[in-house]
Length: 181
Image 1 (cartoon, rainbow, N blue to C red):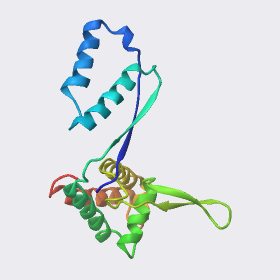
Image 2: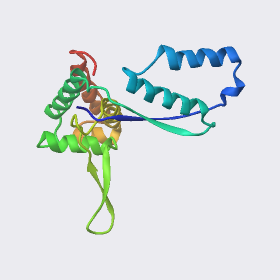
Image 3: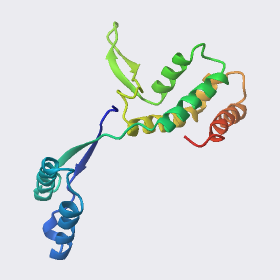
């Protein structure tokens, strides 16, 4: 099973401002067109929707969405990491490079260090620890990090900045041959 992905929502406006016909349409869609899978879940759905409809503007609710992780996306991402590892000059192990990517992407937890500071600890991207939404977000954050001059200089220190950018684009183009991740 994959991890739930929380979705925070807020009521932005009072429904009293809507014309009666729009309120009826909204209620029809939320209560009749969409419903729980069985009697128990339908009751839960209706209670949740009624709470949401009665809420005041600014009240916050959280939904937890569980979507099976995309195996295709995961494999493409891992292939990208492997291809990057194969074409870089800095890292001796894929695991070390992966931790560097996670840190650069901000996919970390912060923990106290023995000297009193705080240190980043890369988070897991395993199926149980990382939702499909989170995996896609960390993937995009890693790509953004890789496009920074600092990351490129670290991976290919002997190349000129334009050569580093070209090297990265070459690595990313290789992954697109099998379909964009």
